[in-house]
Length: 393
Image (tube, rainbow, N blue to C red):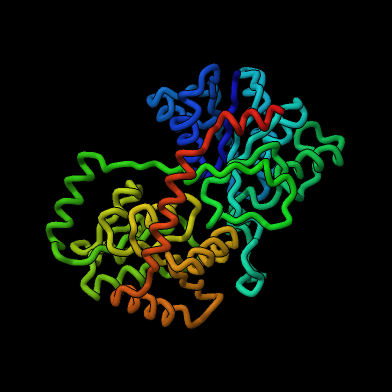
């Protein structure tokens, strides 16, 4: 059986890694299955070195995705590449992560589709906690995808049959099977959801990586200089208007050592106390940290739990992140700092959280241990064969 796997073309590592882990941990050992990734040339180089088959197409764009005027050309390019990939691989199943145009290929070729689906999209948290002004992270900033896949009725394939293509695009939210990269206690489904048996919990699809030799040496030197200081790890991805540099400077002035993936001028100002690297082995860094601050991305929030480390989440005004962050706070395994535009008192809230952390009252460690056990049991019990069997039925 051939499978075609397609990550979100502009999603970077956050949408490639879950599919890569799915391949290496579960699909790689499935007899009779050959999985092919449709990715850009850079990702192809990495994947092929890991023994992962890739479609011989450069799944990238000629147009700048940040320019709205390029929207139609981008859609046409992506659809054409996906059509070619389908013709090359001739898959029986398509697996994707936030690839909004895949339904056009899957539905029109009568192929079942398996989707990585994070439950933050459902807004299942108690209504009293919700912020009606929040948007999905794909609608944030200049992200070219926004909700085009759901709202644009223009036929991007043939410039005809508008109603037909609108129907196919709306099917993105209705894949045959869904893999939830988490656990039921955190990633909750709405009580009245239809086809509940089509959702399969895999546990986090994350990489348990280690630092390279060069990075290890640099970290060792940094930690030696900052010996006996508590370590705070700050990683946020791209967040709008969130003053991360204020957090970095705050902790430095409180005699913490800061490790971060956030590039700010303040890093140079405190270069002895701040260790910056654009990419870091998240599991390892969380393991050596005393406190983790992050934006509650689907994969990221699992690392502090697995390493039994307290964490704070920062507001991004994206409901698919913040609703989950509030669930973690409800469970007592993390605490949430609202976005400055949501709550002008955010800094005092942050200070209160740091005080609780330093008094060791921030986290319910008994609940954290329960979640860690659930994560481990969910991962060990997940069977990709059952998902494929369900999709093909």
